[in-house]
Image 1 (cartoon, rainbow, N blue to C red):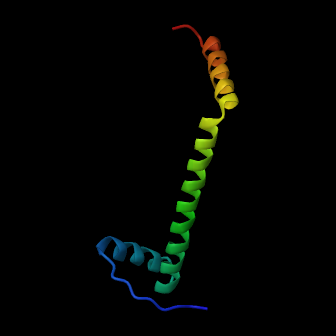
Image 2 (image 1 turned 90 degrees about the vertical axis):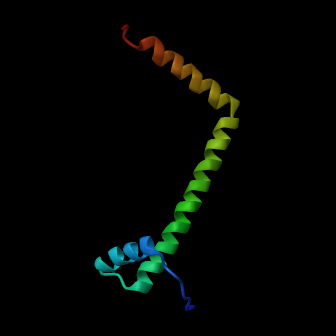
Length: 79
């Protein structure tokens, strides 16, 4: 099912839309793709933030990370 909407685009959005249309997309295809991609990026960003928070809260992981960093530092060439 499709729903018609209307939007007001600023110059930046008009330029972006023009670039997508120049690649062969219709206006509707370009707008739909942009919305889906923007939502996916936001979801991915949120998922990454949650993973980082979980790793930061994992004391065992943090201890292992520090141990590996110490090993790497000990292997570094002098100078």
